[in-house]
Figure (cartoon, rainbow, N blue to C red):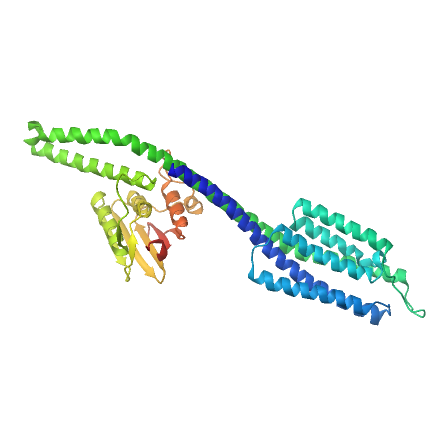
Length: 438
């Protein structure tokens, strides 16, 4: 049941992570809108100066400056808020675009309405909404901008030129259309490129999260199978234990040293099988009476290395613990199995020699396992940690590093594997010290 609960928890984590990435991308896009708004402020000031000083157009300067002041104040407030807060929703982006549409409408009303060529800047707002907002929000922006244009076509303050002006309104409108087109095109290319990059990063993060959830679901299902198999193995192992105990009391075995030695070895291996079954059940959350024991980091690693030395048939095993600061920890079965998995893989590739090193650098602990085997194939290194990537050629093989990668990722660490120039391979597991602490 605990494994099924873990599976539900993984999918809830996926949904929460997806919302978090969506909000993070929205924060980046909100910052892009703030930058665009500063450009709009500079552009409006430049246009007002050019129109009044360069072409002599009469504009209501004071009301237009009031609108600019509102836009500047809103942008300063937006910058202060979104500099600290990183969670941005669709409604908040929608409101920011509404403010831009409102100030643009006010400025157009004061400067000719639809007779002002810069009315085509509404298209910029519509396109930005199509990229940034949900569908319903985009269509609402389309409706609002259409309503604004319809209103400006009937109600606005007309543009006025001096009687002796060498310019005509039609010529100015034509030149303004060209400037507006260049402005729209340049801003769209620049900002849509940056916004698209934000959305691509979000999609990549979501794809990675979905891959992680799929891998964790695979592990949970494997855990269910392993737990069921461990339960099923309990009865035959108990039966074998009783049979071996009976054999030990029989004269045929008791009086034969060779058979008695083999019987002792069988009982030793049977005891190890029971220990493995207990470990599987403990990892699945169904401990058979055993409880997590408090220990220290060095004692935990030293005991693990000693157990590996005595339970595996390895000719040469080197263990170097270079952790200068011992800390209290709780012995974790999953962590122990993860380290043993790396050691077992090295032993299978290099039965004659395996080296296990423990290094400490500030708050990071590095577990380095080195062997003298054939090393990893390039294809394996490229897909490190993916299931069923193995050189062993057996059905179902290649899950070792897959489990290692997922356990380490859960603990906030990383795994690095490489081939050594002199031959052999090296796998480094880097974990934060907090992953071991009480």
